[in-house]
Image (cartoon, helix red, strand yellow):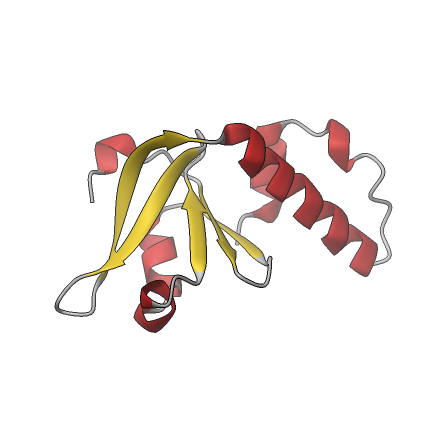
Length: 111
């Protein structure tokens, strides 16, 4: 992993739409499972919106590869939608979610 290009916290969304936010790359690597990475289960971004690629090496270790592609607006929409759904599920008011700053969304969702 080229850590100089990856800016935590890191965000993963799985195929079901669940979102997890990790303070460090090590936290993410300890959580993700190689079988799911190989199956293409996850989309991943860093805090700048850089799209990350998760790969499995020949020793079944997961690695994070930063791409040259960014999509911060899509990431922000994913976080807003997920947080609103979580709050609604918890019976909390989700009306103020849309006005939250991006860094506040990340902080609230960190595992």
